[in-house]
Length: 444
Image 1 (cartoon, one colour):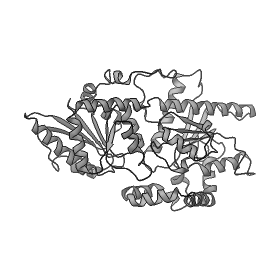
Image 2: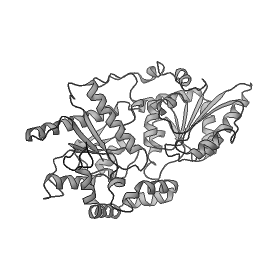
Image 3: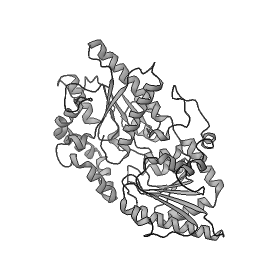
């Protein structure tokens, strides 16, 4: 994988956590732990610029979206796809080969390979497949002869770049019907495509699920009113029990969060004042991520909020699941992981921005599933907040639609399939005397 955005590593970490849960709760089926070696192959093994600077370049292009749009769209053309494949094989074959032969338990050595390779990044299909074929045939072929299992877990949602899809993989896990069709358009055989949902952080897995087997269908709305109901969570977070708007800037703090928060805060104060009364009427939580400047700007005394609203400004948080479950409306950029997590929490979404191409398809995904809308201006965002808070019935309908679209079991479902594959591979190696007491998987 590559840390171009937080979603790829978050998905890899979620699968690692799911392997641990499966080993603990299903020991008869998975008696050995699965060790995961998660690596940013471009940052750690890219031979030179631009490959070893993808993370920095991503941040620049995400800030100037016209650059992202140009590179994304050119990269999706036949010429762009061929050029990327050609240059990667020409310049990165040997460095990436070093990565794929490293010992998962001691990365300073190259004396033992992972039993399986899992890709959670669009630029980690073609070349790793060629390298594995070369390794498994002792250099005889880069096109055939691969026996090491290779799996793609797509971490986009409503749209995906063509480089995600390669028919050479053993399985391709997709989160939506749109991406299943995109995979088949790229000639991935339907028999290789598995649709569960996005792998997400453990805090968002099904409430009260029995992890000893495939959880039965449960009433998510009923569970939301149980031990995870809003007043209890709000109290645990030090929040008031008021209608709450959550504004999220992402882990990297992108998304114009200061202007969004100020516009929504003004609208909430006006809405509260129009209702009369001197007490607090609404609450806004702003999670700025690593954007310390935004956090400082939105905190008193730099920003003074109205007397009828409570404002809580946070930096980076590790309990986003709790903040989402404590909220009634989410304002966020159209990141796939955040959208999937919000749906599990029954949280209607106002999408404030998207990366052209990559996140563009997430807008119709939210709108067509009935749990949100896109508003590209701060005034539009504030107006949507006002409209939704003024219509509790509409908010409840969107909440139900979000829960209907939710896939809280996806992470464990994907992990079970992957674990079955790595166990099968281990048994094959056992016949050759190369088995280990721990099954291993590398997330590239």
